[in-house]
Image 1 (cartoon, rainbow over the protein chains, first blue to last red):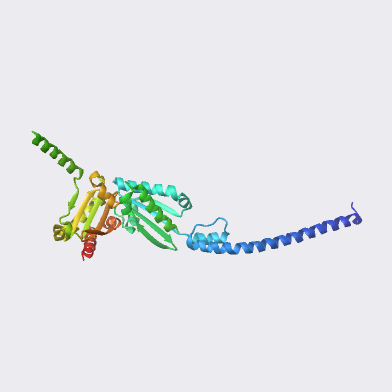
Image 2 (tube, rainbow over the protein chains, first blue to last red; image 1 turned 135 degrees about the horizontal axis):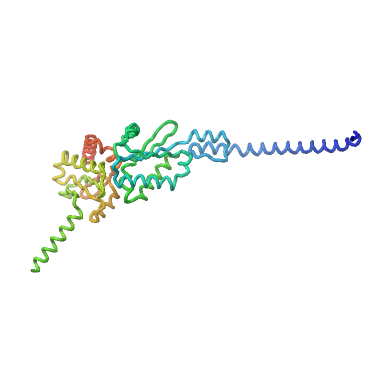
Length: 183
Length: 143
């Protein structure tokens, strides 16, 4: 058994050490809070700003900011319509669309921000969507969905004009359209 | 003998140039009167929509602007942009595939070109709408 006499100086020493440690940690936590508050404010502002201009979320932002950013993000829907008997231009449009998405938007496709569908308008199952876009033959439509609102651009003519013999020009048009719609 | 040879060569040349532009239509009667040039380019391997556009364009012009076509006020060009003979004009209008464009002219000078390819592909299946809207468009440009 250890006597109280022997314990006292040891206990005092331990108590003093605990006191000093807790004092230091208290100071530390205050510093962190202060630093955080200084850092967080401009960060939060920048997040709000980025929500308006660029909806891609910043991985370093807080959970709340991320969820806000996600609800604010626009989505892009791409529809490649075609008939059963396809011409070379129609096939070229589909291939160039695939190339554009793989080269420039693979991240957004993985995240689900870009959804692309290749649909045969002759297929009864695609009747509703074909009628919505008034796609009676080959067609390329890009739709931006933002806050429940849809904005669509018809790039069919550009596709037929460039996809087969001037693919790079078509890819440029498509890339610009998608980039603008992702904002 | 020499005359026959020249005639023979001439005949071959004319046939070869004809085969290069077979299927093309160029109606350009009087350059001095030109106000609106209607151009439709297509590729060799064509789809139904592309063919419909050509039919609709021809119908619009022939049924509504025959007088202007005859006098040279309106010109009609339907060309295969993949034929070497049409390379220059196709490049001028960035026609690398199906392309529908209207160009305005004044005093023999080219003013503006409007690319209506997206519009044409959208309206092609509805011939009545296509013809009506194109007719209005050309009438507006002829004012």
